[in-house]
Structures are given as C-alpha cells and as structure tokens.
Length: 243
Image (cartoon, rainbow, N blue to C red; front, top):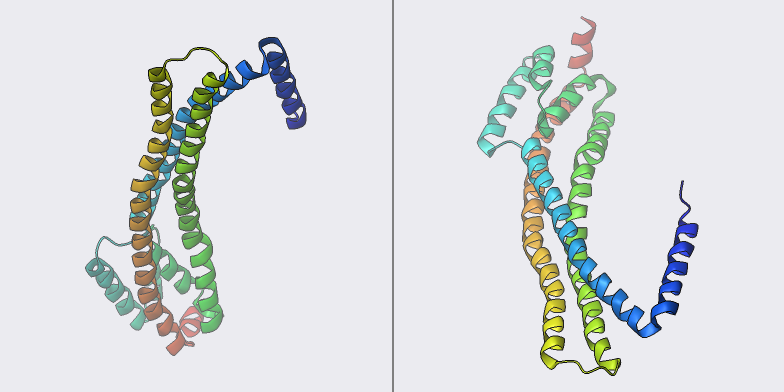
C-alpha cells in the first residue's frame, strides 16, 4: 500500500529536480499550463458525475412515488377498506413486494401493529428518515456538490491559464499580442464550462427537490390514515393475531 506522505515527497522531489534543470520561471509556466489543461478534464468529470446523480435522483423519486394523486388515493382506499374489515393478512399481501414508499411503510405498520400506536409511529418516522429520505438527501447532496464545484474548477483553470499567458511576458521574450489574447480566451473557456455545468444543474436540483417534497407530502397524507386506524383501534390487531 502506497503511503501518501511518501508519494507527496516523491512528487515534490521530482518537481524540484525539474525546476533545477529548466529554471524556476520556465517550470512554473509549464506547470501552470499543464494544470490549466487538466482542469478541462476535471470539468468534464464533474459534469458527468453530476449528470449521473441527476438521473439517479429522478429515477429514485419516480420509483418511490405514485404516478398521480388519483392512483395513490385508489391505493389508500383499497388498503383502508381491508383494514377496516380487519383483513390484515390481505392488506399485508397487498403491500408486500411493492417498491413504492407508501406501500413499504404501510406494510411495516401492519406487520408491527402489535407494538402500540406511539412506538409504531416512532418506528415509521425512523424508517422513513433513515431508509428513504436520507438516501434522497445523499443523492441530491452530490448534485449540489457538483453545482458548487463547477464554477470553482472553472475559475481555477482560468487563473492558471492566465498565469501561464502573462508569465510569458515576464520572461523577456518577444511575444505576439495575438498569442497572449488567444491563450487568455482559451483560459476563460474554463469559467464558461463551470458555469455551463452549474446553471442547468441548479434548475434540475430545484425540480428534484420539488418532486421529493411532493413525495414527502403524499407519504404523510397516506401514513396518517393508516396510523390513525391502529391508534383508534389498538386492540383489534392483537385480538385477531391470537385468534
């Protein structure tokens, strides 16, 4: 296993040798130019990384929620009809295997109905936060990181490119103005690429957060009805389970 301290010392030693052979000024210019060019690759990776999590976010939200409020209402009405009749086995079978968030939590409520109303409510809130909302927050957090990193990487590449461009003037060599202007123009592309990543991803993140909010609200509305059923009839589940 490579030690990071040894690796850093090796790189520092290599840079020192290059600087000693070629001169500090030339080495600094070449290093700045190499890092500036490398920022293009980092910006591309940052964009692809953010795009991956944007796609995952949309897929995850679509998987957890119902396609329409009407479809969710139909599911709730069918489930509540079974619960009101005391047909808990049928209600459990109805929710079992469904990957959407509301059926999963409803199945959890039905299976653990004997523990009491308040412990059951705490259990549902814990599972909701740990297994559903926390996962969505983790994914959207990476999208937010991509949005913040894009302009910073772009600015870093631009500064390095301009350092390399203006550094040529400081060498005392005759440099054409058009050459310096072209290099500065290319350096500014880094900033444009960073902003081009951050701006659309910012709108996409807002859309994802709105969808997550709708899923959270629909979950709350559905779970309240299921939990209220067992809170109003705390003994029914126990009696039927021992029958």
